[in-house]
Length: 285
Image (cartoon, rainbow, N blue to C red; front, side, top):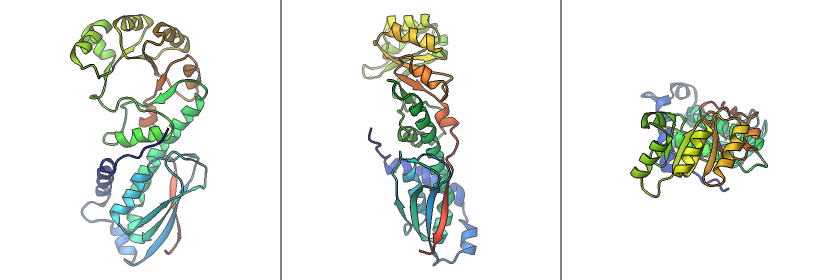
């Protein structure tokens, strides 16, 4: 699958806001005071631990927005598996700008690479099955587009992006509507024919009710591998099956082996550790 970059018009406002948060009204008072304006440097962006890279566009933009004279040369693309000590990129330009943008650039790159790395680990854990890993809406406010991009960089797929692009009837919708059947019927009466409908079910009986009404996808929540196999048999290819809940690298293989189409995990975006990446000063440019 080709990893298409995010449009700059999406990435740039996020990077600008992050830089403004750091620079405030006075700018980088340390670098201005300590580093001569004419000094130039060359630095290497180096991995401190193995993982999968994501977020190079945001990282490069941080440097360019601080000082357009800074040039970043990438040595690997997003989606690349890296080992300790690999050089991801080299950056050259005015030293003040390099130091000013450094933390923002590394924050984006480390955070997004962390998401790509844990996603890649789950993808490897279920290799050989038909299941795909997908993310959820449990993302950092304001960073959803970037975090979902990082999921793709790690070999995963995206679920819905927001509340507007698909119907997902969750347990509270079901409870308030008065049951699975009523919730599905209301959804079908409200949305257009192009909008997909998915319903979350906790039991096989709820699943049978959903299938009798007809839906595009079912979210099988917190089911055991045995229950998931039974659910796949009940669906019999009539809808997309998605397993969710208690998904870890240790449990993913057994869940995937049940025959489900998708496995979703919110922790890929809300709890992924940052990948440790640093800037090593090389020499004056």
